Image (cartoon, rainbow, N blue to C red):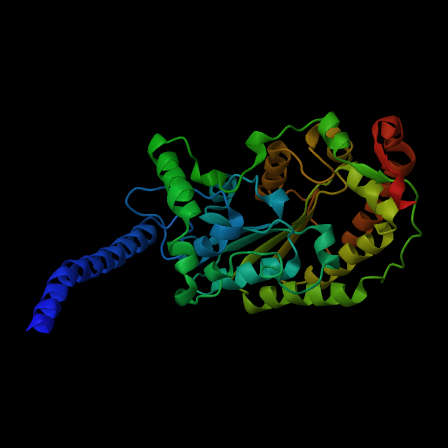
Length: 375
């Protein structure tokens, strides 16, 4: 009898505890479910859908947002390239070509990475135009995508929704990205045509450009022109595959205007002749396609020798972005390459490169930082 009474008393005392545990578990699951639903509905990385509920496409984190926007947004054209392509105003192309363009960008602009983004876009979209900013260095890069290698959030890329827990229950998403997207949408200040634009926080002038250029003290031996032949052929093949698979798309390939510091650096590292050869080979392989137009801005002397246009060796002000966009919109023949003129244009760039080294750069040599550790 005593034992039965003790057991009954234990059960009486444990019942509230068990109910508490059960209720706590139920509420926790419900709370987590609500958080997940909230992130899915807001979706600041556009992993599941394009913006809705009046929210804007606030695109500021390309590694996290670019792949989702390519899969889920409505568009018919792309602005493709590295960080130098991020400062194009989408509306320039939309108005000039009567299209609806968004950006497919990657910081390093390697060919394989950009083609990865193109493949993602083509999964659900037919494209009228691709405006492809082709970096000279991309032709010498490894022809393998680098997203996983460089630590990109692969749970946003791999289409495996089981690992989306890293997105759905991420405090940075909950307390930073979603509030930022809502704030930018409600204030009305954010312009969706300025996706990934970083120029508003930068200065473009001679002091900035020279301050960020560390010159090699010694001039390295010049590499053979075909030094990068194997990776060059692979990168050209990647671009050719895109062009051939999509004859309905018009590809505007263009080489952007780097500063004279870039060409000085190529000379001193021994890459100048190989990089010029790479461009000539790439242009020659692509220029005969009916759906390809190629524009060349690298030999625009007045732009590249004026360091007030730059913040470092590569990155130019949005004014230069606008200039290049306008020339393509106008189909300006002064910048358009043809089968008849492209070899001469590269020869002109070669001549200009040596003028930079032997003439244009000389007044700045006392202002350039030199790295003597590489001697």
